[in-house]
Image (cartoon, rainbow, N blue to C red):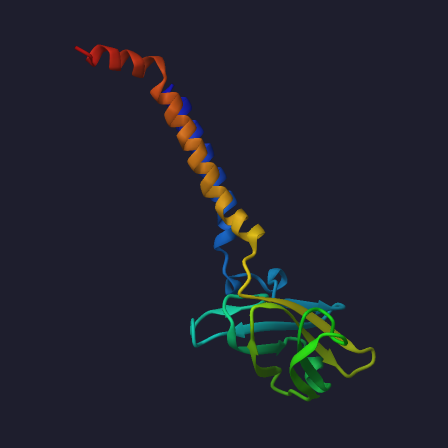
Length: 192
């Protein structure tokens, strides 16, 4: 009986760790190929977006999920050196359409020999899109959807699923142990 409980507990903890570990991954701790803030166009052309809100959390960087409204610093890293030789512009719009939705911030296309584009914008709660465009042949275009101060219920559910399953499994095992023959015999032997 005890051997089965230990095996079940080991399986439960391994399952909980496997499910919960994805929720703990931070933006800056992943490989370039797996980074959700990296956009690739073709084989080599890549850019990386980071958003900062130092007035709230000075050391944190974000990408598509911005936790609070307010001033937000956007930093676009032109990973591909060829992008540094063409004019690159940035447009932030409220919504998803570059042509139809309200432009919040616009940085004119210009050359960035250092490979970094810096901009600041003020974002209210809602959905935005960052468009990064390059004047070349063929044209270069990247998009980043932004969600500002919006709860991502799917992500929250996935983060809570592992601990919830572990708690349910441990509760089930505790129930089985408390209702086992040995425990019942021990309890009945202790009664006066």
